[in-house]
Image (tube, rainbow, N blue to C red):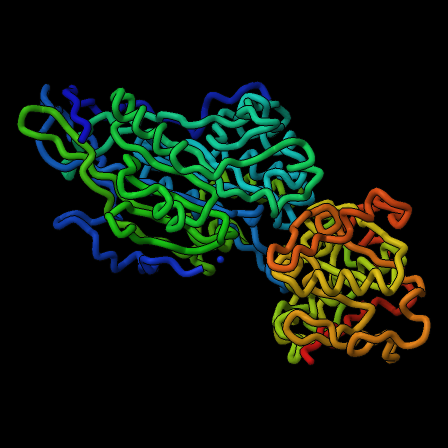
Length: 608
């Protein structure tokens, strides 16, 4: 327990703008997660409404701290993936992040009543890459929004490396600076990750932790100043990042939770902070369990798994995680108890729950609609982003008459979907190849028809389908070598890389390739080749993520065969970027088809 003698602070009468200091310019765990409806949280303290902020200036505050309980609210977003704005197929725009920003300001105060020290606002990483608007603008609208919303810190997600880390984190370990309304602004929001290394040394562009000073408030509006230590951490997500942007540059993550525990112990023993939070790009409950029962950390806020979680470890360590895509956010209350002698200590975490963004109240189709539900500032940022991308968002390439969904196709053993068929075929055409694979993690969106007979596909949709700016690797190999790829694809190591296929049918049983069929002709069956097919040439096309990820299967010892071929003449090319070339080949198709973009609906991994 940490105890400090303090003088009670009078609530500030000045109002602050958000960051007014602008610079010119998915396993089972031992404890089941609890999803809690925000209106029915069982952890509410008696007599306190968790939905209202008691931080009203009571006038005169006593010279000594008033005994009792004081509350500081925490809000966490995570895995936003650029989805600050979401546009339905009918053109309806949902201002999700503007809704979340408004709920944050319900606690901090609106307009002249705004006080940043009433709320701790954090994000668990994977902020920029994903949504069409953010992808087309290389994360710019989120750089602006994170600053304008007054985030206290953000964790470093694996997808911050997708566009190369220099483009999503500044050298001073902050969110990137940005242009806004003709001026350059310096972004001071810190980026945290205490266990990221490059060539064996801690990287300089993330901080281990930050300490932020906030005001905890009691039921009568009296406040005490508290210091919260926020420690950044990450799961070992190296395997989910393109090799050339992570391992190939000497980056590594040491998934040793004693690193976080040592920092927490240091901060609390030195009385530098009154409570500590682990802000991690890792599933929250797994992180809480890994910290161990002796941890001095008081709350774990997680990410990466896209889960919505609220609960406690077996020994009572609170954890919380706010989902994904700005669909939800998480909130909790940190409580501090002031004793009769004026000393105080952190006492507990309560009122843990996640809040769903209301899809009716995040609309702003006309002036004044949902004005009381949406942050005017973040609405302005969102509309500026929409205006900047209007040409691409409205640039129709063609149309589909089949829903490009992620539902598994019957008979595929969960290894084929319509959207992945389409992606594979596009990659094949980019590389002028016979066969193409996509990895399961590369399937990031879908385009259902939503009750209509057709759906237009825009340039923005294609950048949403291919958000990573992957190069397309094209190989000239034999069918015998392609069999090696299929054999590897059926292992635990290869399954997540060579997950979906088009251009050839692979019939399989468990981990065995039973038959290969090319254009209706059986070329391989039960261990034997038909004629000279083994030596015939075939062109293979994949993304750079698939081509450069080394995931040796531990049970069979089989490696990703493409790693070896990358240094041989089998590699024909690797200089075409997926999204821009996908637009090119689809435009070519639409020009000769009257706009119809064909989509294959049959599985090509087929259970024997």
